[in-house]
Structure formats: C-alpha cells, structure tokens
Length: 211
Image 1 (tube, rainbow, N blue to C red):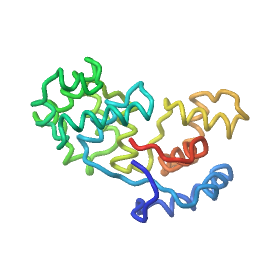
Image 2 (cartoon, one colour):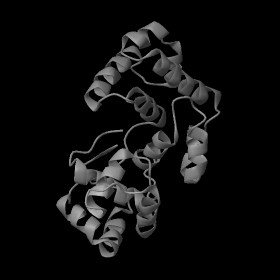
Image 3 (cartoon, rainbow, N blue to C red):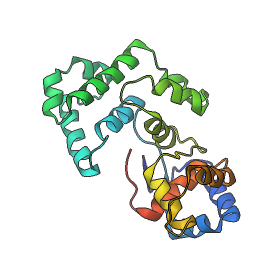
Image 4 (cartoon, helix red, strand yellow):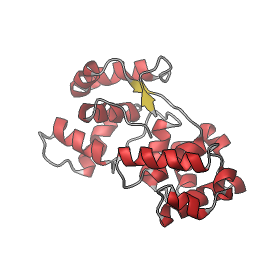
C-alpha cells in the first residue's frame, strides 16, 4: 500500500536520482510528486484477501465490501475466513466465486502450501509462482503484491492498464504503446522498474490507491 510516509523504502532516494538522470520524462513526474512514496502496510494474508475482494469492482465499492467482510472476520486471519459461513461472506458483498477464492487463499495459508515467511528471501518469480497457485490470483495480482506489500524494487507489470495508459501518454503522445516498446522502456529503468511504474501511475492519479 502507499501513501505519504517517512518510512519509504531504503532504496527510494537512490532510485529517484538514478531514474531522473536516465529519463527526463520520469524526472519531471517525480518533481511534480515530491512528498509521496511507496510503503508497505498490512499482513500478507489480509493484503491478498483484499486484492481478491477488489477485483473487477470500483475502489469505492471494494472499500465498502471489505469493511463488511471485516465485520464477518475481524481478525482477517485464514482460520477466521474458513470458520465464517459462506452465506455470511456472500451477504457481505462477495460473489460466490470470490467466496471460493478467498477460502482457497485461506486453505493455502493454513495448509502451508504457500510460504509467506520465506518470501523475503525468494526472488520475484518464485513468489509469483507460489501465489498463482491460488484460485483468483493471477500474475497481475502477484505483481501488485510484490510492489505494494513486499516493496520489491524492480517489478514491471506490463499488463497493467494504468501503466500502459501513462506510458502511452508520456512516451507516445497518446498513441497505443506496444508491449515490446514498454518492455524496452523498462530496460532503461532497471533495477528500479517498480519505482518508475509507481510514478507513472501518479501522473494519472496523484492520490495513491491502497492495494
């Protein structure tokens, strides 16, 4: 999740300087947003559960549903979700499919088939491989988790519509940007592609959205 914070990642200042030197477009965007930075909040299970709740609905609707899900399982622990009745989760605003997804996530945590305690020592692709075992979690959701929860510095979510839109606006004068071109842009941002992505998002929406 993101917001104004003195506890920004240790790499943030170095990444800003490096990106501004390499890419004047990003430099201008960063100067326009000097006091916001990425930061992580929350526990892994709750973060992933919230990402499932928010799929394919507006931010405002997701916040409302999430509040009602928390009323059903205030601790937001895997065990609490598994103990909660399916109909109560559905009445909180979850579709039947999302009820299955959030319960599958809880099952994986309880069974130990994904290893949150190991993720800090695992590379990005290994974490993604574990996360996509869970129903309802695809690569995009896993990449958002890497950026917003684990604070990984070098993730480029090329399938993210916001990133595509911002890159089109700033690098192609509004014309559609090809995937290969976006990947090539990312090469010049490495090893700080998460930071570049985050500032491109800010160029579209100055108010950080919580994931």
